Image 1 (cartoon, one colour):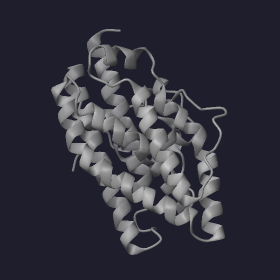
Image 2 (cartoon, rainbow, N blue to C red):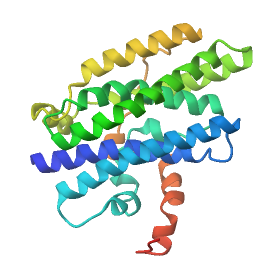
Image 3 (cartoon, rainbow, N blue to C red):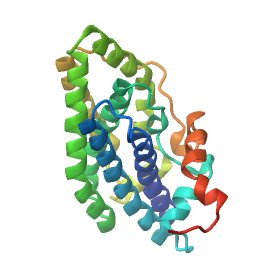
Length: 252
């Protein structure tokens, strides 16, 4: 794989993660448990889609084949998406949604902090801008995890069930395949070992305060980076891509 191909794939991984999670959070619009949280979830979704757009635009330039951010978002099929399986999981109840965001945020923040030091100036700029937004995301999801875990018996139970169900998908976040290793060698991406250490420290600190139990590292799902997804992504894309598929070339 050439350096250009590896960089393209890496940009798409960063973009796809944020795009798919943004869509999931956007599904809560008008359905949040209270008005403030309804708006907060929509704002988080907008932050993520903004980050996704930056990476898609860079990916289009790296590829150099005339594709746009819309082409990457709406005209690729399920096997061409390289997001982690975590972000495509259904919303479930509010505790499930918050737990999914918390696990992602605990990984996303140290990753963006490291990418802000990337030798690739474009990626460093994208990550540097994202750090402030992602810091807020992690603070908010952590506070909600503590509120759920250290709240009522029911909220504790729902949070623990969500954590147990989603934990297996965190393995996908730390896969260091040939593409990632190539980016590390080039100084573009960070080694994921320090990211994993920061993730573990955040998880342990928040779960201790939330009186929740960290699941054991059993089977850890992977394959998302290779385009191998859960059954949920196809349904998500069918909804997200419908307009462009039904009316090719449609613009506002």
